[in-house]
Image (cartoon, rainbow, N blue to C red; front, side):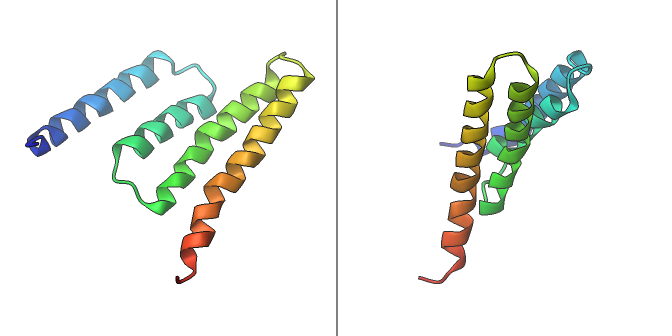
Length: 101
């Protein structure tokens, strides 16, 4: 589509926007800041199988929030179940693709 010439300017705009957002919310929990940076780098850069590990950082941040905030036992149980399910989903492709077909 001829958009390859836009890659560098779009990357710079995204990098600056992430920096501005991080500067504005610099007093937040460091796990949240790392989670946002991990999501941006995961979805913006070239995708490889090991890039799925970047999804762990925001998952840990969400898990920590669910454990700390006063949502109740049901929410904490759901956070634990979703975290465990996500672990299985993210680790399954690496094990399946490691064996030759």
